[in-house]
Structures are given as structure tokens and as C-alpha cells.
Image 1 (cartoon, rainbow, N blue to C red):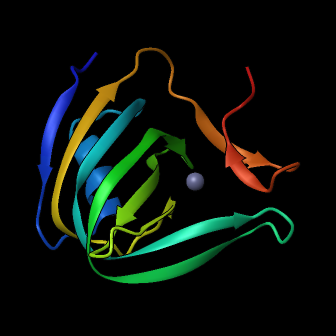
Image 2 (cartoon, rainbow, N blue to C red):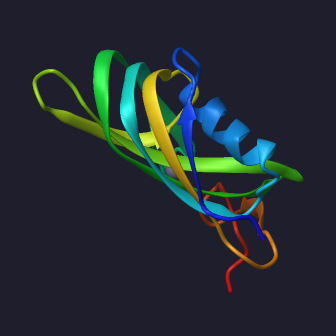
Length: 136
Ligand code: ZN
């Protein structure tokens, strides 16, 4: 099994794509991670459980990534990253949600932690409308 790793992600790249790339490069399909740094703009989402859809909102400007964590598993047979993030702007106000593509990296430090055992596969879960792991 792979070791935990640190990675500095490239400036100006998309944050979600870069996190995914860091795990794909290492062929790690089951992991958890934390990340800190800063982004220029981001799109966060909130899952509306009544409408069963993600509602997204765009944020602009340079913001600190005060916290970002998530996990890695399979969806449609591919390495898939699920990440949540909290961002703080110049006024120290924080916004958080489900991380979507569209956050441009200013600086990002990733700590990836591989998890042993079989990689779970995300499947459509009718009660929630989400793609979740099987209950165990
Ligand atoms: Zn989420």
C-alpha cells in the first residue's frame, strides 16, 4: 500500500482537478485527505435534499482555504474525489460547502492518506438521490 504523502499543487490549476490528479498519479483509489492554502475564486455547492440537486454559488477574490477535507473512492470505475471546503475572505467571513470545479489555486498543500482494503464504489442511492458507498 502507498504511504501518506505531501503534495504542493500547481498555482493557477483547478483545485478539484489537481487533488484528483495527485491521487491518480499515485494510483491511490482509497484515501482521505486534508488540504490548506489559498484560492482565487471558487464555486461551492449545497445539496438541496428536497429538489435532489446541488445548488451552487460562485465566490470571487483571493480566499484562504481554512479547511478542506475529503475522501477518494471509485465512481463509474474511476478515481473520484469528494471534497468539502471552508474559505475565508479579506473580511474573515467564512463560506463553506461541497467543492466544485472552478476554484483556481493560488497555493495548495495536500496531505493524502491512503486507506487499506477494497476501494468502495459510489452507486446511486435512491433515498438521498446521491452517489454513495454501500452501507456496511
Ligand atoms: Zn459533498
